[in-house]
Image (cartoon, rainbow, N blue to C red; front, side, top):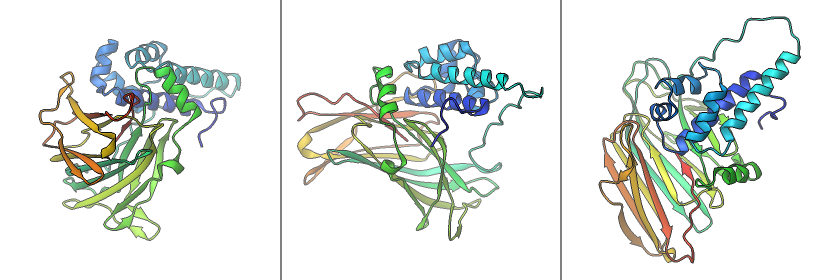
Length: 327
């Protein structure tokens, strides 16, 4: 559980602010550079804020909340930060040097260079819950072993109404119990550690070890990892977005729905420099008994590209416009 807002330290408040900015930027499908340009900041500034090198500023919080249409969620994190600073000042502790900026956390060991040889996502809906299964073939082209892998889960139920979405998740946050996160590598269960645990945003380290031993990914090796989790349709919705964070050779997405819902699927792609455009190739439909599957594949996708598949259920009286995002 997270500390209550009136108990958090200045450091925790600053980290929470950075995580909130990252969460909404990812939900909106914006690169750090694009967000900085929208706000009129230097292109590197957003990166410095998210890594903790720059402390939260009022102007940045206000502009980021507006640019990302975050419904005051980012602004509230800045207010929490200001309150934490005020409490620290009231404590009247002996003067001390200001805390050093938090060093940017390196996702992987220095000298490692991960490449994704194959990235396959299967999202299945049973009429009540979504179960996402991710399989990635990772290759270490660097000089040091890799001991952990970062994944993100982020949802936004009402993207057109962020204040409503924020209120929804405050009342009904994502929980670890409902996610039922599992991960395996080489037939071994992988331990995991939460990096950020917010109401609608999780960052998780998958660790290449368990209670029985360690199995790091050594230089020159390739290995499949698989992880899966579940979210009810009251917290997900009708789109699924993939962001290319590492050099990737093949990206595949499969959506599986009950055929009696009569699903229709389409998609868009965005890059660091281009606005959203239709996918260059359509998802391919196939029917299997009571299930309808849609498969979409691309090779050598551009780094930082984002691919978004959307759907509606034509058999429902009204299209489901609630949305969610998972990575």
